[in-house]
Image 1 (cartoon, rainbow, N blue to C red):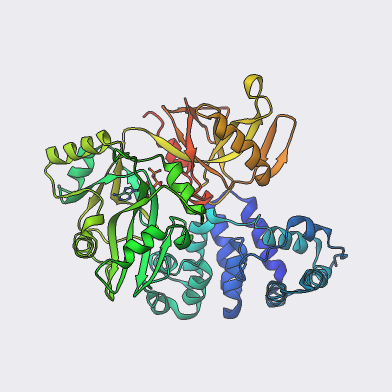
Image 2 (tube, rainbow, N blue to C red):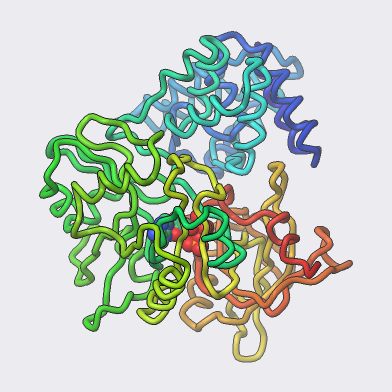
Length: 503
Ligand SMILES: Nc1ncnc2c1ncn2[C@@H]1O[C@H](COP(=O)(O)OP(=O)(O)OP(=O)(O)O)[C@@H](O)[C@H]1O
């Protein structure tokens, strides 16, 4: 397949807001790709390279002096091989060698192909928000239902590998993806409940009612003595959390995969702020905040996969392996006991409760109705689109944030409001230092950003608006905190914002 097909498809997908048109464009190119090309094609169209990051910056890439050609003759595999050659060059003299390889590659590119490659190599094309559309396109191109494709993606963590299996081996190849201890799966997520009693009634009381702790999600894999701890975005943070590793090694089992929340407590046993927990995930150095784990799920124990088993069985397994590290939970409480448990959670300084259907399987990567969260405050996780320079006391700081909701069809985020409320001096300083690293462009008043910072916003509600493109605006929005554990793909959608409009 010619490389230019990918460049054109990427442009076509970016140019339309229609989910159907995006899916069709992707599906067509996937159906035409040779089996050996599928992995690369899917990775590129998701803005990724199968070789991972190659660590060459935008400035170096744009300084490469090579005239472009008019003829689009490069093939996907030629470009793939050239990137592999660059990625595998290291050691003495590698800077020059890599530049030579890139000069040769760019010299064989058209202008459009070269621009695409620069954006691909600098991560600018990374398109987490396109995952849903790509999953549909893979299913359609392979003539399969979407569910087995989605499942294989969740278990493998890679759309590119999933696509190759779907297109070359069909449903039976997809079924071969199983949970592997040591390979993290995307965590199951929750939907907001209308109310505690509504969620309890929806499942006829056949529920686990658990504290919703305001820490950070962890997924723990242990095989023998080999322990790995992953974040919500599947980043391996094992070396930052030795106290968790030690504790997990002590559990009475040979292999296990646990899902949970971790946080540090104050001396009086109340939760410390989320930022303090997150700060531990970056640091390798000495620390005085001790993290505690609170597990709420067990999806593998001693060679047995539990991912498709009902929650009740998974909780039995959890009780067997880590009884002292379970999140406070009540199984099948009556409605009054469930409400009392929720009050208790709030009194102890936690966020609220989760109501989970005991009969439900572990839907990796899905935000379903079988886990529902009940918390008193309404919050949205929004994309920071830019920030305005402050005035008065805030002169010199990047202050008023432009906030966007995710386009569920993979387009650019849609602006829904602005706020500078809730920003402490420390956060203003952090924004001023950090935002230029994510800069897309700027004008006199505003620095516009790549959509990769997510901020959690508390609000009183939303209202119809003719000013914003989504027709909806936030009311009394204030910043709660940044969410470094989330990516654009996990921001709330414009549909979630619209769902808050008064009916
Ligand atoms: N008992 C629990 N069961 C599941 N998740 C829990 C529990 N306690 C705390 N959590 C946290 O809540 C999150 C689940 O809520 P949700 O799927 O809405 O994620 P979220 O978008 O990060 O929500 P929020 O911003 O409210 O934490 C999990 O990712 C986990 O970090």
